[in-house]
Length: 122
Image (cartoon, rainbow, N blue to C red; front, side, top):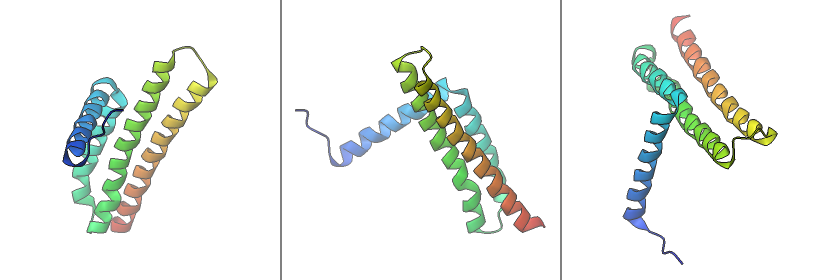
């Protein structure tokens, strides 16, 4: 039986795996790169739009969420592709559901930005 790592070494290893995953997604997924660019631009814009810490958090939380969901969507797509490239309705369904999750995050970004802009400029 393999002995599990504990404590600080486990955290260090997990951080390394996370960085490896982010790097792989950046290198292989155009949608992730686009979401990072969108998030970076909007992150900078959030400092100009928000009038309070609460508004700023409302603007940036969905930006982190889109990156998280895009990472998970890419993981699902990679796992499905690893199983096989032949067409199967369950494979298509899994990929479509991941795509829908990304869409909901983009809608959430739009709604939060519209709400803050409306509150500040209407």
